[in-house]
Amino acid sequence: MTTLTATATDAEGHISSATATFPTPAAGVSGTLFGVDLNPLDLTVYPKCAYCRLYNPPGTGAKKIATPKSVALPHVSQKDTPTVANLAPMLDPLDRPILWEFHHEPEGDMAAADYVAQTKAGHQLIRSHPNGHFVRFAQTFTRYAQVHHNKVMSDGVKADWQNLWVADTQVFGLDCEFDSAPSGYPDPQMFFSVAVAASKTLGVPFVIPELGWHLLAGDDGTGLAAWYTACANYLRSVGCLAVAAYESLGTTGDYRLAGTPSRTAWQSAVAAQ
Amino acid sequence: MANPVIDSITLDKASYPVGAKITATVAFHDPDAKSWTITGTATDPEGNKVNATATFAVNDAVTVALADDGNRVWTLQSLPGVSPAVFTSIA
Image (cartoon, rainbow over all chains, first blue to last red; front, side, top):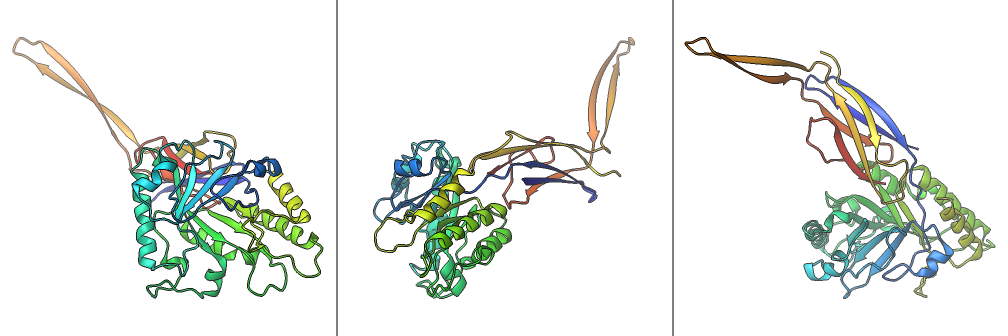
């Protein structure tokens, strides 16, 4: 359950509080789709899919969202500089809440000043659109870069999220995938600590748009499947808004969970919501 | 002076899917608030009278904030200091 606390304070500093509760929305999703919209096949595999990550590659702006309304929360990103024209296909027909961001995983890709300026510009353009009220702003970084501090933006600014965050962004995103030298499946509390801490610091919810790890040598798949289950359980316990599984096969262009034990485990996690 | 009183917190739904809008309404009042009715009377030289009344209230300014253990941002959508306070967030 989520506990709401209302606090009333008068001019003399007298304070009263009261609480109420509601069921915490469970985080869960399909395997991540490397495309611009939710594939109906994902709804076959994950009928209770609650979140879908939609990628608009460079040159495409932000396309119209075809994912049926009320099926899942779309999380849209675009690589192009936001403009009235390239946001219009997404915004004009928009009829449900979405998350949106400019240039996910920006670490090292451009000048920090440009990333921040274009993110702000996107927020302003969306806010001024009649359907802008449907949009919640997200910014998604990579766990690897935020843990290892190994990326620098092209203007010399360190690519730590604190240097790139825009004040009116409402959701903190962190893509969490395999480390360069995995020696085991990481403890979820440690693995998601950057996202949990940032969420608390900023006072905004967090999402894990990409979650994945390699199948380790000697594992028949049950170990990786158990790790996915542990991650889903942990993320639910700490109030994660949403998470998408992402099998890092690397070169195929299809990042859905393919291994049977892992996919079965994730199906159970999604079905539980 | 007494503490302000929160009368109720009401949610618009019993449960929410991820990403849905949540509306929470907080009713409150200031127990120190008082109101008076003043009556003005006008009398002409013939003794005819006409009355008019007005009511005014004196109360502390009460600020209401909402938070939850899921780190959501709750945005006040109603006038500050006026009950009920209506907040929205996303599930």
